[in-house]
Amino acid sequence: MKIALMDSGIGLLAAAAAVRRLRPDAELVLSCDPDNMPWGPQTSADVTSLALTVARAAAVHRPDVLIVACNTASVHALPALRAELEPDIPVIGTVPAIKPAAADGGAVAIWATPATTGSAYQHGLIREFASGADVTEVPCPGLADAVQYADEDAIDRAVAAAAALTPPGVRGIVLGCTHYELVAERIRDAVRRPDGPPVELYGSAGAVAAQALRRIGAGPAPDADPSASLTVLLSGRQAPLPGSALAYAEGRLLPAVSPAH
Image (cartoon, rainbow, N blue to C red):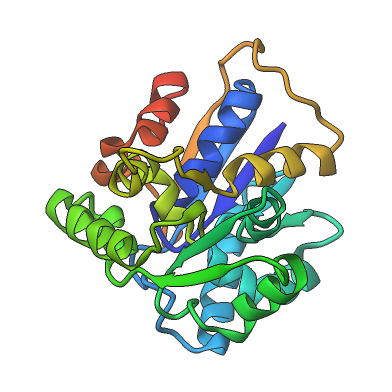
């Protein structure tokens, strides 16, 4: 079994780690695009073109399924990716976890990139899944870039700024960018209230990993032999995991289970 994941940067690590925990025996192909990131400020046409290039690099390795572990690419490029790759390679997109966050009741904040915050796409998801909820959209300028480069000070500043914009009564925070899941505990600490219940964080990594396995008819097997390979593609070039990836537990999990080659 071979599962490919794609993103502009290391935001795909959260979903890759989720796949690895469910199926330690799955071969992984991680395809990202450091030469052209960030994708957020690009036009829709440019994002689609870049995403297709990254997906094609992964497709050369003949995966059984491709996870688009990127909100931006899922918004702009999913139809084009599916048109080119399916049915040979099923394509799984990433959608912010607004539905489960709103279903739990109470006020919800959506942390997302400035380009996504206030977008027609995000407003459509709010109307569809959270029309009766108290929703606050929180832009997080610089947070994805800070996570990408493991810039500790920049992460702290961006998280603190977003926490200051998050209403104190919020019970759930949707992590609307895959990079944010890599610093979930720091976000949780920043919004912790001394006298209130803990704030629940809602990411997408676990759901997309499970959906990818369902699409190829594979169930979880967390006790499987962890002997599968890991292939890393940086703008099409085979390479080790970037050093910044190893700053996060999700990144360290991957080479610990199967070395890059």
